[in-house]
Image (cartoon, helix red, strand yellow):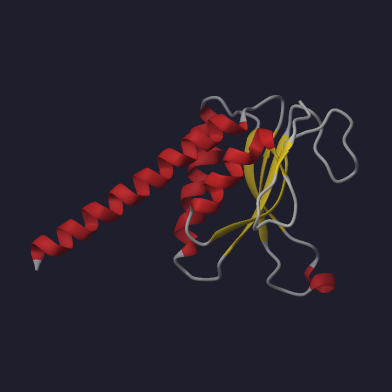
Length: 147
């Protein structure tokens, strides 16, 4: 499963091709910024995922509205995707010990195992982005027509 990496000009390093679409889709969500990822490697080093697994870590902006994006992601990954093709993929919080690193270091990690497909998750999340946009349009139109 070791695949070539895809260079991203704004990132600090290459992104494994197997999860490039997922990373791109996550970065399309408002207030989400991916900070690390791994697409799985046949002979992983200590900071890499094993073949057949993947991992994407991201942080959220501190704005209160970012909470709604986290709720969409949690529903899509832990409920919708988990009930279908991603039964081994989860979104969970992650943090170093606050007494060592200080506060405000909370991040979120999406981990998939046992050959769950990150591209299927990316397709689902792309549809969630569209759903959020459609709902915002409907709300905007409703507000305009009531004025």
